Image 1: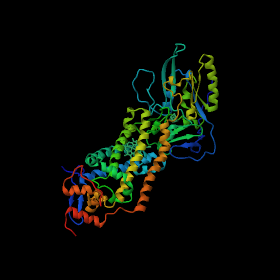
Image 2: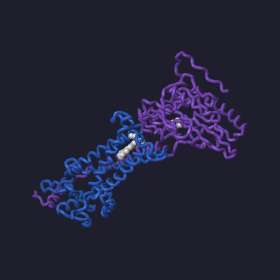
Image 3: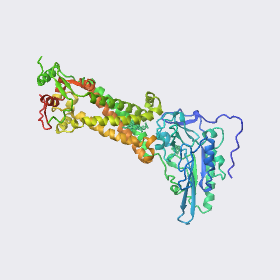
Image 4: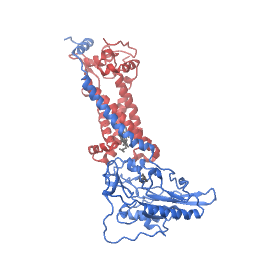
Length: 313
Length: 232
Ligand code: HEM
Ligand code: SF4
C-alpha cells in the first residue's frame, strides 16, 4: 500500500507556493523564480480502478460544483463528457483483448494532464489567465479569463470547457489549493483502491515501476507508464495495462503534442502578421515623403470644364 | 445603354469647378457603416491576436466584452459589405485595360497618370481592393463562425476549429493590409475623401483619375468597348 498522506491540521497553514513560483504566465512573461519547487504528480493506475466514481464525487464536493442531472446515453460514462462542472470523468471502454479473447473493462479517469508544455497556456491570449507553477501545476485564473475558447484549441487532450453561465474556461486544478497546504488532490483522497496516488513526480515514477513489474508478472507484458514526451511529460500520469496502445483507453492520444497548426498560429503568424501590417504602414509613409500628395492641377479643372461644357473661365 | 461602370446617381454639374456626383447618400452611409465596423473588428481582433495589443480590450470594456462583441460586429460588417458589393460589383468587373494599368504600377506610384490608359469609375488598384475584400470577408465570416464557440462550438471538430482560427488570423492580417492600402490611397490622391463625405468630386479630379468615367457621364453613354487611348 502507498503510505497515505497525513490528514491536515485544523490550524490555518500558509500556502507553500504561490505567485512567486510561476514559470509561465499566458500572454505575458514572469521573472525567473528564485527557487524550483519539487515537481509533483498524480499517478492514476488504470489497472486498479473499479469505476466507482468516488473521485468524481470528491471533485464536485471539494470544488463546490453541481453537475446538472443529465440522461443516460447507454454507457457508464456519466456525464458523457467533461463539463465546466465535471472536471474529471471516468471513461469506460469494453475491449476484447485479441490475444486472450478476454473482455477487459478499461476505465480511464479523464481530466487535465498538467502538461509540462501546456498547449492551453500557449494558445491563451489573455495575460495571466493560465499559469504554470514550478511544481508542474497548470492552473486557470478565472478573473483573467475572457472566454475565447483558445485553450481548448491548444490542448492536445481536449480538456478545458467553457461555462455557459459565466463564459469562463474550467478544468482540473490538480487541487492547487489543497497541494498548497501540503494535501493531495481530493480525488486521490477519496479513491478506495489507491488507483490514484499523489506525491513527488520521482516517487510516482518509482511507485509506477513497482506497479508495472507486478502487472507484467500477471501477464500484462505491455504494461507501462504514460508520461508522454511530446508535451515534455505530464504531471498526471497513467499506469496502463497496455501502454503500447493508449488509444484503446477511450482515445487517449498515443503521442500527444501541441498541434502544428497551433504552433504556427502562435509562432510565426504572430510575428509575421505584425511585421506585415507595420511594413504596409511604413511603405505608405515613405511613399508620401518621396512623392508628396497627388494633386489635381488647375489645368485639369479647366479641361474638365471644357469637356462638361460649362461656362468657360 | 448606359456605361457599365456608371453607377446610379453619378452625374456631372457644370460650374466652377465642375462638380461630379460620385456616391449617393445611401452608398455613403453604407460605406461608413462598413468602414467603422471594419476598424472596430481590426482593433478588437488584434487585441486577441498579439499579447502586446491586448491593451486594446479597454476600448471595448475589457477582455470578456471584446471577445463577445467582436463576432457580432463581424455579422454587421458582412451584411453591410454585402450592400456595398451589390452596389459596386458591376463597375468593378475586370477589363483588359486594367492589366495595362497594373503593368504600369510604377507610373501609378510616381503620379504619372498621363502615361496610363484612361480609367473608368474604378482603376485596377481599386478593383483589386474591392475583390480582395469581397473574398477576405467571406473567408473571415466563415472561419469566424467556426471559432464562435459561444453559439457554434458543437458543429465542428477541434481540428477544424484549429484550422479556422489560423485561417481567420492570417486572413484578418491580409484584410488589414488591404485596408491600409485603401485608406492610404484615399489620403494620397487629393480630393478623394470628398467622394465619401459630400458624395462629390471635382471635374478636375475626375479628369485626372477617371477620365473615361467622366466622358461617359458627359456624353450620357458609353460601353465596355470604348476605345481607350493613353491620355496626352
Ligand atoms: C466577418 C465576420 C467575423 C466573425 C464572425 C469573426 C469572429 C471571430 C471570433 C469568434 C474570434 C475569436 C475571438 C472572439 O470570440 O471574439 C475572432 C478573432 C479574431 N478576429 Fe474575427 N470575425 C469576423 C471578422 C473579422 C475581421 C473583418 C477582422 C479584421 C479586419 C477580424 C480579425 C480578427 C482577429 C485578428 C482575431 C484574433 C485571431 C487570433 O487570436 O489570432 N475578424 N473573430
Ligand atoms: S491537458 Fe490540456 S488543459 Fe491540461 S495542461 Fe495540458 S494542455 Fe492544458
